[in-house]
Length: 414
Image (tube, rainbow, N blue to C red; front, side, top):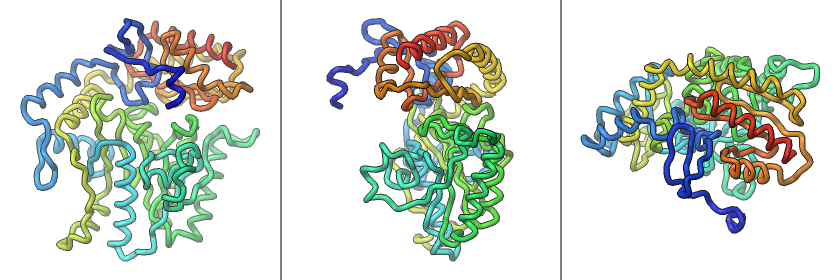
């Protein structure tokens, strides 16, 4: 708050495509998709039209004893895409995490395993900032202050490829990390309800990327020891990693998948936790106490669901995943010329790029952000990690601007 005394908030008046525009007419390329939510650019006409049509019919009705067409259609589409047949809606990613954690805990209680009450997550993980989600988060700046409020969880070694030994491949390191999980669960599985992971990319933890072999192996391990696998695809779902969902690249199906952010194309708050028939059946009972008693006022909001349906339709109409491959190839070709830059660990997965700047400046993050904004570019480094997560509609001239500006800023701020 104090920083904004000398770093004023940017008042945005309007936006279109990848560009934000302030009240003085200055434009800023949105290189982070407004915190990873905006998939198809601002002011997307098809999503706007879908919301408008829904607005003329039904804006909202509670899902306690009621339902409506958009939530039914969306649930069926998400079920087909994920292979998980049951949806529980909320409004934000942290709430989706809370739902998955509570549902896993309650499943084991209903199933006669009341001692399975604890959770595993990865070192450097991020799953949200409500109390339950923060308990499985491992980013100190968010967690340390509230530690006395949180249930203790255990963190497993991160498979982030940057942590591999000098002579070790990303795949070999991922396997080594997975074996640690097996060793731990072989002794403690009777008390562990679930293992929650961010598939392929630990975003808020510095864009740590890892091999899909890790997901495949921990799926096997969790099944072996009767521990749920929760896939937090809030940031990486909906095409960010190159496939619709990151878990597809490991050819696995988790017990829960948490989705939010890009689900509505960046238009309205919505999240959903999907799970299996087996878990659903554990709550299917005459006893209210065995039911999953969790509610949000705006659960399954009709306007948000209509935006999500339009988002999924755009994926189909525009062959988005295929088009993104061309964008990836163009950006990768440009970045291949950065060999003389003061950076390391240049990495890429789908429509996410990151690198770590070699710098001794303690103010790199703030200086880079401020100078980028002054040059019309919105990027928000995580420590010394600079990343790109642009809307999928970014074109080549916009990419050229984003990369050339970033290159000059790295040289100026390192």
